[in-house]
Image (cartoon, rainbow, N blue to C red; front, side, top):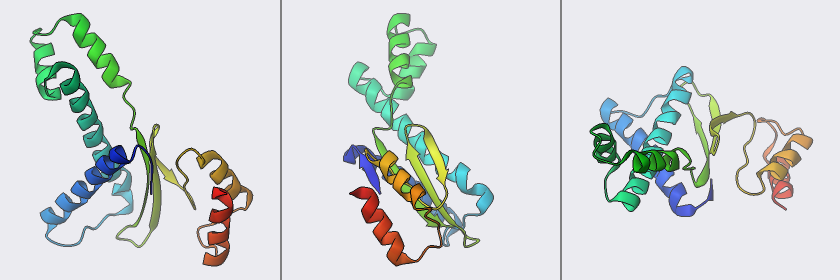
Length: 163
């Protein structure tokens, strides 16, 4: 599921898709994720996405790629004030979107993670994103929703949370 800027969400989702595709190509078999690897694996695409955001920002501002910008800063080819301003702007870049990631690991454990402005967050039982996430999570907490609840009450609670 996605929330926020759709184009940004698709870019972030594509970073995850690329990560898992590369893992599968490397192993030549289905991707096996073990419990102790989950968080680290899910952080790599976030770094790639934010690198892309920085690259895009620097290119739009200075006409340089992010790597070239950093090299030019190191060689003092860019005025210090411009470098400082640009790096400050980059540090303030946000995701521009939110994602819910749900999957099963190799050891048959179910995982739900939320990717938002705070980064990667593991979630128990459910996750909510977007402008209504506080209310949605409140409704699901109030109903004491659990991961193993039957599908009927679960669908009703989700409906109730979004209305």
